[in-house]
Image (cartoon, rainbow, N blue to C red; front, side, top):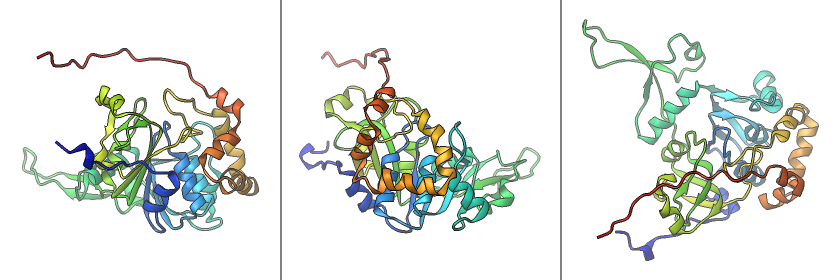
Length: 317
């Protein structure tokens, strides 16, 4: 058993965590599928002015659009590009379609292809096999999607060819969750996506959470711990850290923001003004949240919907 006196708290401020683990030219994974997107961390990367990043994100959405507009990203690795049911992403489209103002290198995979890349990275495998690329034209535009021959023969002695994808091993993975203890045991519920796999695949990880809670609270419900402390480099308390996405049980999705974003990002001048006001002129995410205003925060409040308690059982004798 580890001596608790030898354990080291993983708690950091957001500025410190980003400056410690992100660097120019880094491969950065930002994950969260619709739910619990680590927007505040993305904004801090913009504030600190990091450049030439390879951004890995299954669903390239608003935070990618913003980081592109701030010239943080030179390469995007993704399987979906869009403003999540609310419209388009102007900056991404300008760079991919017109190289405006510069060309964006875009490496496209399917959703499951991205899942397999994270699985390979997390398991330290040289590649991961999948069959879903048969009939797809993605292998014709992405030379990292390749075929290998199975080492196992069929009943007739022939050998199948199967597609494989390479691992992804980010320099740092950034995710958001509901809560954690100071040691970095991360608890989450609702739509989880690939957060755990993305963390295990990375050299370092930063996890922003709505709140840091006591050890006893985390231990009282261990099955909600999706990422253990040994895989976490820094845990950061950032209330409203996923806005405009939602965090289950804490606040709702800001659909008004998503709908407004299409018009903002479609206009270069409006986009530059938005970045200046909401990111460059704010010192940190708490100021961003204050600028949202009480009316917006009230609109995003959620009611209670408690799960039924379960009995883990305790030893009587």
